[in-house]
Length: 450
Image 1 (tube, one colour):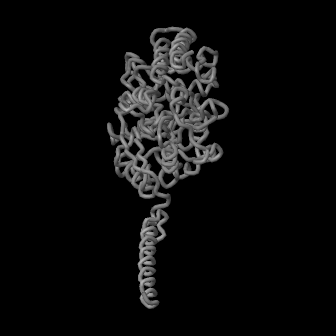
Image 2 (tube, helix red, strand yellow):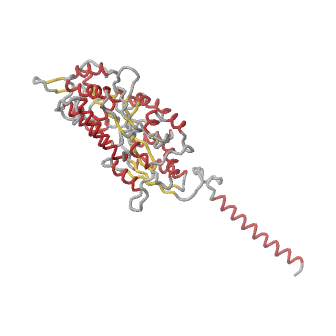
Image 3 (cartoon, rainbow, N blue to C red):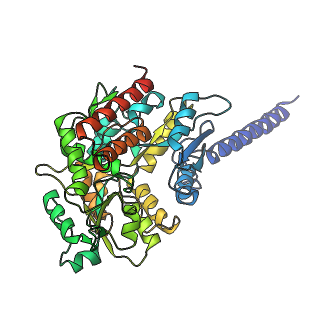
């Protein structure tokens, strides 16, 4: 072979090799997760192994959550999130059982789910703590209200849930009934509110209440009776949780005074009666001036009687620093999740300002609600301060607190029983609370294996 033919062959081979390298390089650039070719600007994380996250929601239909999920999946194409709205009926028991069963093939636990802000002492052992690399305690404390820091911090000082909303007990009032009594709105302290409730209570010739001033004092006909008693316990400085939240103390003088105060609205002030219809029914019908409830009870009122004009103000307080009762939800991650880090990344994403606003707005435009859930972030509270219904909750949020109930359904039933024993049966408060304390502690002993 002469030198000219050799040079020609070498040139052809070199051309082929260069062409192959160029094709490989072009394919590599087009698959780049960083979007260097300008066609993948929405992708901001590397494409890794496929990840599927099962997410149990509670109050929001799929249409509310889907835009947020799609937004996250677009930025994280290796992540697939399956959202299911669960029924509140039996939710606590179903979730707890699934978490206990862990990652069994028959019924694996969801990766992400909602827990009540009072459940942590029961659920902590089945939860994955929030990694400090995703959000450290300092950032968490700076972002969310003190009640969330307290409610979702475990006995090991780790954080176990991120709230997407905050809620609690506020005072609902009928504007028309207040105007008829030449009142503008309820006062901020309990002594004044009691006087206003008396003024707004109207009895028939037989002495039976026809128009009630304030729905407090009984148990069976008040939707949030146990929550209201919890508010009074906290406002009166009762240290309810004992022994690392595995026991309760309900027999101190402060606790007795709180129960006495609760039942005084029926047996002393006579602004409410255990013989009346439920507080919600009375409010719907314009026969109740005031009641304590969380924000979402407004939906019940609006749906039942759109014509009723009502307002919401912070719950009344005792002298001293105000204390309000919180009751809301946080997103948590299963301890058995195989993709817990990815799950926490998604929850962190949901808790950012843009997503919180979109979540709120979707509840209105897609979910059909009159308003969305109150914002969970401290740096967003001012945005809702002038809201007709949510302003009161934003005002209360910095001073909200709760107590870790654990067996919520059982404990609330024991509190209602104590109220009923005192208000209806005439049992002394100290006796009713002793029975409640013993029953609750026996139940908690079973839960914690004590």
